[in-house]
Structures are given as C-alpha cells and as structure tokens.
Length: 521
Ligand code: NDP
Image 1: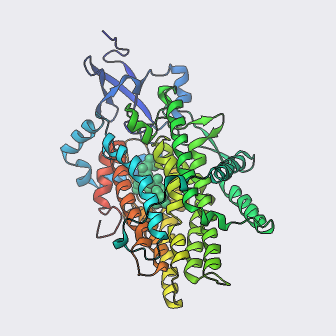
Image 2: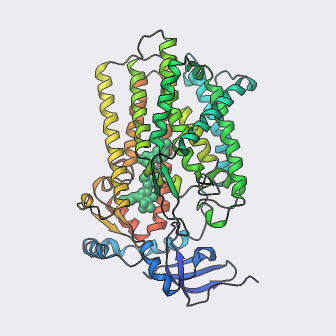
Image 3: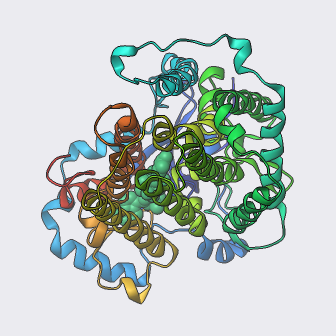
C-alpha cells in the first residue's frame, strides 16, 4: 500500500491550482484511493491536491528568505488598502453565490483535455497540414472561388525538393545563430513551480535587423528571391517536415524530463502530449527551443515571404512599383512583426510560454502556420491583382491604426501592471484583489472588455484582408480563422483564470461582462 508523506494537521506549502505559486496550507485528510490530500488554505479555501503539488514547509531559518519571493495569501500593505476599498465597493459581489466555491473545488480535481481531447488533437494534427496545402493550392488557381474546390492536386513527389529543405535548414540555423549572439538584455521569466526563474535573452529585434541586412545584401548578390514564390508549396512542405521531426524530438526528450519540468497542460496521454507538448521549457543548454521558435524563424520568415510576394507581384504583373494593396498588406504586417519583436519581453507572460508545453501545436503553428498562412493575403495579391482607391485605402489605414492602438495599449497596460503593480502611472486604474496576491485590472482597457488585446488583434486582421477586395472570400480566411482561434483561446484563458482566481475572477466577470466584442460577446 503506498504510504502518505504528510500527516493530518501538518502545515505545509500547497500549490495554488493552475498557477506556479505555493501557499501555506493545513493538511485536513488523505484519501488512500485517489491519493489526494484535502488541504485548507489560510483564506479558508479547501481543495484536494496531489502529493506532487505539496511541499514541506521551510524551516524557520529559511522561511524569512522564502516569503519575499513568493506571493502570499496575506495581502500586502497596499493590497490591504485596495481590499478595503474593494469590499466597501463590492459587498454584493463578494458575497457571491455559494455554487462558485463548489466549482472552484471540483474544477481542480480533474484534468481537462482541451481541443476535443485525444480524438480532437489527432484530427487537428492530420487536418491542419492537409488544410494548409489545400488553401495554398486554391489560392494558386486563376479563379479561386469556393465553387472550384477541390483544386487540382499535384503529385506528392513534386512537392518535395531536397534543395528547398536544405535552404529551410539554413534559414532555421541562421536564426538560431542570431539568437545565440550575446547582444540584448537578459531578463527573467515568470516563476516556475519550484520557484526558479529561467533567463531569456531579448534579441529578437536585433535578429530582425541582421536578417534585413542579409536580405538587402541578397539584392546585390543577385540572389533570386522569386525562387521562394515559385517553390512556395515546396517551402511549406519543408517547414512542415521540419516541424514534425522537431515535435518527435521534443516528445522523445520529454519522456526523460523530470516531473517538475512538465507543462501544466500535459496529460500523460502520448497523443495528447505529442500535440500540446509535454515539456514546458525544453532547453539545450541555455538555448530555449520554444522561446526561440515563437518569434524568430516563423515570424521573421513571414515578413521575408511578404517581401518575396511583393517582388513576385511586380515581376508577374509587369509593374514598376507594387500595387497599393500589396504595399498596405506588407506595411501592416511588418508593423505587427516589428511590434512583437520590439516588445519581445511580453511573450514571457503569454499562455504559450507559461502554460502550454512545446509540442506539435506550437512547432507547427510557429514554423509553418504563421509564415505560410499569415502571408496569405500577399500570396493572393500576386495572382489576383486588386486596385484600391485612395479613399478606400485611407479607411483601411484608419481601421488598422485603430486596431493597433487598442492592441498595443491593452497589452502594454497589462504588462506594465504585471511588472510593477504599484507603478504611479497606473495609480488611476481600479483593481480587484485576488487570493493569490496578484490583482486584476478592472478599469482602463481591461475594464472595457475582458480581452481588449484580442479585439485590437481582430480589427487589425480585418484591415489586412480588406486590401484584397471583395471578389473572393479566400483572403478573408485569415480573419475568420483568427476569430475562431481567439474566441477559443479566450475560453481557455477564462478557464485558467477561473481556476487561478476563483471568486475574484467571477467578480471581474460581473464588473466587465463582455469577453471580446463590447455589447456582442
Ligand atoms: P493575454 O496577453 O490576454 O494574457 C491573458 C492573461 O492576462 C491571463 O491569463 C491573466 O494572467 C492576465 N489577465 C487577464 N485579465 C486580466 C486583468 N483584468 N488584469 C490583469 N491581468 C489580467 O493572452 P495571450 O497570451 O493569449 O495573448 C497575448 C497577445 O498575443 C494578445 O494580444 C493576442 O491577441 C496575441 N496573439 C496573437 C496570435 C497570433 O497568431 N497572431 C495568437 C495568440 C495570441 P495572469 O493574471 O496570470 O497575469
């Protein structure tokens, strides 16, 4: 019979569900069947925890050095003040329905598989690559109407070109080399379950500059960039093969990874973990594979592909200058990528880094989906010229800027608040206190809707598609897909936040009822 490590009444540290934070808890009982401990947090919350989520309390001598680096269930001084204001302001809300507490307890007891569980992720893994190629083939047709589905399919061996695969490897390892350059600030990520913080070098923007210099130099060296357009499907296949090989490697190495390095999203099921990623932060030495793939080869690759499409448009349509539509698509997306690289540090608090492991989902998403699907409007414009009037272009530019302002301000506001909750520049914002010690913004952008950054991102996505005109729905695929992605992502994030913050999250939802679109959703 397996023995229990902690006795009833013992005071230990228990992990707060869905987070990497540990608080003082008292062990109430132990269930020998489920091997779960019932524990009581200092705020009275009772939960069931696995043994791996419980740690011994530090001896007194170490306790003092432990406390300042961890969040405490006891509010800090400025939080006591906030809590007082909060409770005066929101007496009705804090009472809350008792059913919420029940939810808090039950939700932590089972491992929810997302994306439709094992069958869902299996279908996604087979379906997404097939869908990508169908979409690109549809777009290559002269008349890319949905009525012309399915497009003529090429022979599989026509899609494979070893030279292209070699070029892809060169691109990937060149970006890896840029990542390794000792330039750029080194910062710490969010605390892991064991309290450690990994170090990350912020040099994505420098990598972009170096890549731009190389692309510029390639004009002088007469490198035929048109080759990427004429072998676009072969490039997509090379990237797909690489992402699959990478996923296999990631899964294989994760089998040997210690438990505390596994992602909170992993389940123990091989198919599901291959997809969602088993290991949270796979590293070779200091080289962080997930962090590197998130912003470099795919995102910078997307900008290079857009440029290739612009040159291909000029070549194939006999233009001396690119079309206004192509210039808009290129500039809008360039701004998006440069902004992401400039604000690289913000990546460290995203769901991708702190929650999801590194598996097929992110490997395929970062290395294939982003560069080959996000460049879809530019790819479309090469074969389907669209003339745009200046008044229309002005409206689209205004829409893009509006989306960008919402996206950037919302993200910056949250990042600044997470970095320094007492930042005087944010003193005017209202907050809700949570039991984890972290507060939630409830005014400003985050009081407008619960995911203002998604709203801005979606407005920008629409502005990227509009320059392609209204002849076909195909260039609008991106905005449709992105709406589905962000609505689903929002639901995932809500689930995580509800687990993390319990009643405080419910309170936030009551104060800010709309998720993404004000008065709609
Ligand atoms: P967010 O940046 O929206 O982060 C969500 C987290 O923010 C929550 O888990 C919570 O974490 C914190 N949070 C939520 N509400 C509040 C609040 N009121 N006050 C303070 N903190 C709050 O999530 P993503 O990682 O999904 O997105 C990051 C950006 O990337 C977005 O702009 C999104 O549009 C973009 N994106 C783009 C994609 C693309 O393909 N182009 C794909 C996915 C995302 P905690 O409390 O733990 O800090």
